[in-house]
Length: 136
Image (cartoon, helix red, strand yellow):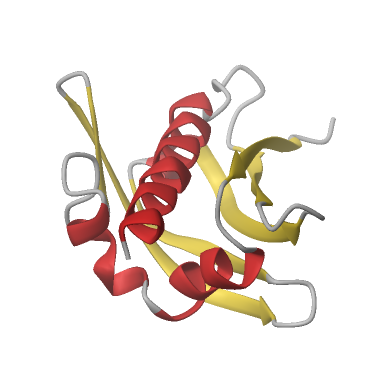
């Protein structure tokens, strides 16, 4: 039985797709400043639980405004053989955009839980990016 699974969420933001994509493309080092209450050295802080996560850029698609990160280390790899996170920005006609946060992963065991905390974390980071860009 295949244990490869995909989770995704889409968040509408009030910033242009180019600006949103740029943050994930070239300013990821700013995340501890942008979302300091949830991001610190690639750690997720959620209700007293800390989930560590180290990512490497695997693929950048400038044309489609998407970037894929491969999870290289961290708590997530205890439950998943592999995990990739893709963020894609899509422009809307009104100048706003949608940011899609996709997690592709392969479970170590069939009964391993789905990584919903990481998906929720991604949506929260996207909203923090929006807040940051609206202030700029």
